[in-house]
Length: 155
Image 1 (cartoon, rainbow, N blue to C red):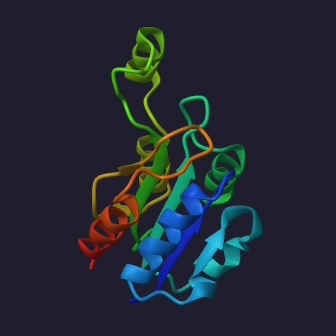
Image 2: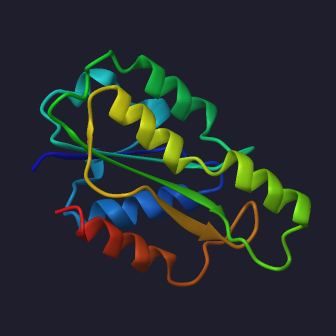
């Protein structure tokens, strides 16, 4: 099945997750692409589209949102979709106000999935969030393995 993993990454964490997902699916490097470098014409023939973004201010990155707007209405009809994000883990160290904001606005993966579905895609797996320890990383131990396991449930 032709699979494409698109991602945006500011500090390399989301890219690492995207590459772990792609590797678990047996994707070639050219099928794991930074969103800002992606030509929308490459969607032709794709059967499974996976899109990931870091969560920034409770939402997907600007390039991710712009990409989602560029997909024509019905442009994902017949394609399976999945979405993921990277995010800070909710721990006791997270201030109460931030927890409150997250409870209202959430993370990037869910809105990404909703947009992909709105464009005609069929969601095959619930959106996933992978944890970074600080805003710039590193990834929490075990997240690359968890991303690979999540990906394997897609096939």
